[in-house]
Image 1 (cartoon, helix red, strand yellow):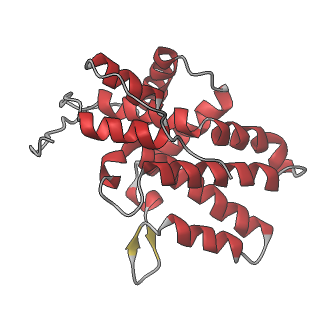
Image 2 (spheres, one colour):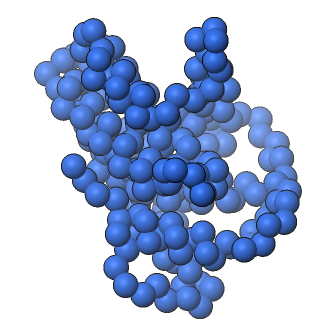
Length: 210
């Protein structure tokens, strides 16, 4: 496909949280996504938080960056107590949603693609919803994590559209869009293909659930 350098414009905003709230709400309505308001609020707060690099990346003194999801999962399995395990599970879900939603292009030609992030993130939120049940925190957050797990793919579609709405370059990379549809069954990817006169053939594999 076209390897031109894409020049994204900078969108000036006075309040980043308000920008994400308005943008996400608009896309949810446009895509017809049925999402609990508490889950929407969680995603808005997550996007606002991770817009600060010090919140997204980890700094252990020797390295600075994002730990692979598989290592985060190992951290959850080896956690010394339930609180640390839950923190690791939440971190997996949060990072997976943010990367798949806003940096899906960075996953192209990598060892793992967006379907891996969807599976890992969705499963992490699902496990977290079970872990926190019966606790004070669980009374408030278990339903939110359950909603995020069940609708992880839909949320990735929503965030993909929010991202594209802030970019000056609007050309659709058809090959990548078709690949995303094949890997995830994304309704948004299918719509973009049909808008370009391409009717997807065959069954999209879609994210598997374990």
